[in-house]
Length: 197
Image 1: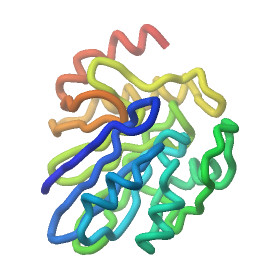
Image 2: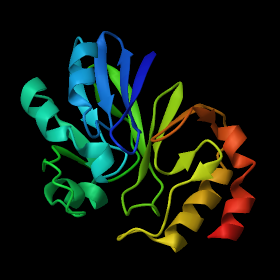
Image 3: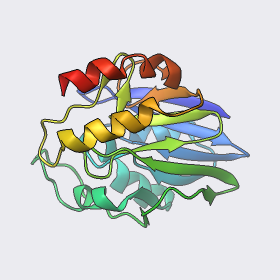
Image 4: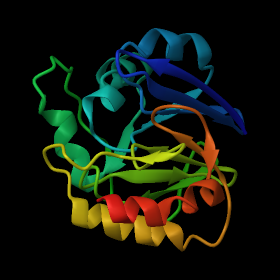
């Protein structure tokens, strides 16, 4: 599996291209991501959104139109795509597949699944591949997602962090902002974050 990424827009949101088995999956195409994505994909098959905040989904509409590929997002965050919730001028889009459980999915011969970790948003997810997690704004290197936005839920975030602490395996973690980390590295910080919420 090959992973490319570029921080995009004023919030330096990481847009990822995951290439495996001859296909490309685009994760969280944010503000200004389209040009970079179009230069770096050869056989794109899907857009995957970890959650619905504008800085992660801004380029959904353009890439869906140009590449004619579907959008996947958790059902509880789909409303973010369809309305410019934060009045930022975000182009609206519509998800083609709403994630309702954590079963494995397959697109273009590549398996992945959405792991639901609500708190930052109602439908905030980690997208899990064999080799890696794409954690959006749930877990960062040395930090966690904010819970003071509209539709955030501190109580749900606490439960998500408790669940994360119990994950029995290690994987590389590619967050929505900042540098990569790992499950085991960030599990060491969870007790601190639980005290801070």
